[in-house]
Length: 211
Figure (tube, helix red, strand yellow):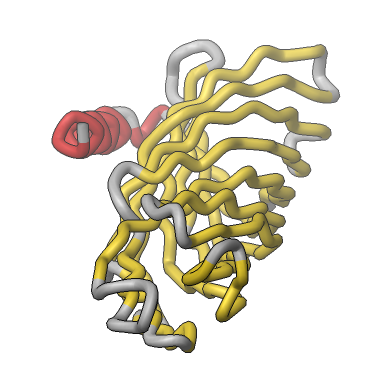
């Protein structure tokens, strides 16, 4: 799947290059809220959703095809999940907050439907390339450690609307393709050493302003 979306991103980039002379280009800034949904492949681990944020520059290209365009951003993204480790009959030994910090680069194909000259509705989807920054190893206590991968590939699917050609509000679901990191549980009385993978998806609401 990763190869398919990478090939699609390259093809879209080539299409943009070929039509740059006829394309409308708008730069802007984008920020918003994400709510992380974390799943871990273990019965002794339990996670709760937490809110985070993202912000950064964005650009959109209007292609010489009615309603079709591409947008791309470079976003600083921070996500959190509350993790509880259960070693003995539902008695949680440790409760910690996992934090991930990344530079995410979403590249979306978008289709807009005009609602007169004031607003339009848009639908979009595309790949996102993430590069984790900051602390990639977090000690959760009780011989439990979270190890984050250096990079993450995911997919965005969403919709929104644009008002007065400048202000854009969108909502999307970010789907992780593959694990985000590993949780390693050390040797304790009731839990032998084991490694379990974790994956972070997120609901995102974004507000962008294009100059």
